[in-house]
Length: 49
Image (cartoon, rainbow, N blue to C red):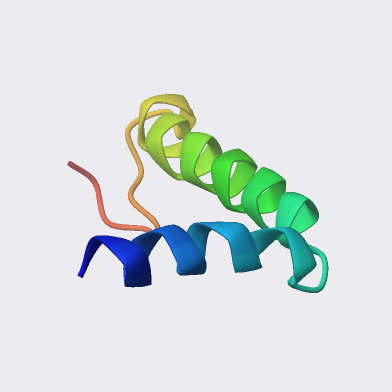
């Protein structure tokens, strides 16, 4: 089990665009968290809260 986990972590280096994917995932997560606070009382569907 531990050897398998170590091997998976080593293989992440060779994956295509892993750093870029993680960077965009973090950016979109931050946008998703901040968006409800910046929509001036309207939800995504246009309903008043």
